[in-house]
Image (cartoon, rainbow, N blue to C red; front, side):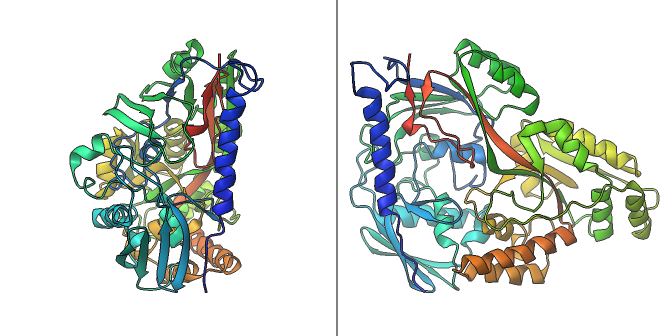
Length: 510
């Protein structure tokens, strides 16, 4: 079966719309912004993200939302993907020339911000670096056996088996310069093909961007932009109110009403691709026993805790992926039943419960600490004593990757909008994430990945979700909604379900 891009007209439309926005903001009377206020002389923006990036080295932190958000302002991918349809970006088109050969035709009018032409060698080197890093995307890329440069603007990915989701995966492979990406210094201020240039990155403090004057696409109106790290929510909101910052991401649920009450500030909220999960380390006792895992779910009053803590900022989850994702199904949470939890613990040989710990990162997501405390309190009622371990994000990442934990609570996302990204990456035997392995799940996910038939894939994901819901390798309590608050002088800002806004279309008005 051949799958070809039909998105060239879509890209043209996007560029045209971007052009109209900027034209509308500069057309008419001098200084007009199309009825939305006078254009500001200073086209600079300051943004306080919910998660400040721990690095700009995307291949070594490929699944970190904060890293993705920062890097996408300056590096670009071959395609964008909404879960069902891909749209060209650095690639003009693509074609499965055989079931195991996916060829991308690249744009020939793109340069990096330093003027270096973008070629197939950059794609090959960037993708190879993701593969060599053996980080979170290793399972998604494992089937690639060759990255073949056919000519300067054509690259072919050869796989060991058909992979129907490979185009979507490429929407998360950001392309850097082939001759520089293996230099650690490059990732302090990576040179990309995108609308902005990284001028300075200071860990835990700020990232300074300026407009890429050599950008191949529609020029942004913003001339400069800064991401600033403001860890305390109260300080973020104060900075937004005073105008010290223009945009704040990921307002905690208990602060939404405060933000909505601010004058000259707008608040947007959308269903997102993000969610919470708690994993059991099944390499450690007693979590290898499914009865223990089921007991820990029965002990949680998820149906009350989620609305109490999150209000309209989240919903009770119904699958191992958010409901916004292709392949999500609506499973029913195990009933809150402390007596059943105690019965299961006794059957597993723990009539008096047990002691363990749960870790999560500081600033790990909205209301993460109150939710952890509520769940720990529920578990204590059935004899399970959980020690809370809140860790700095860098330490938490290190411990998480080395399986140095009993229970792990964190936010996660499915940024491609396709269940394959999460289920194949996290829950197959090959993933080796928490000691969980079910060959029946692997076989189901392999069939879903290889198929180009979306209806068939949806049915297979339904089966996969049911297997995971029954095996309980983790607890999925919450689907999060993304939000963003911004000064009314900020126009053209849109919040996607990925919670990664693109600032290239933003205009500042008086």
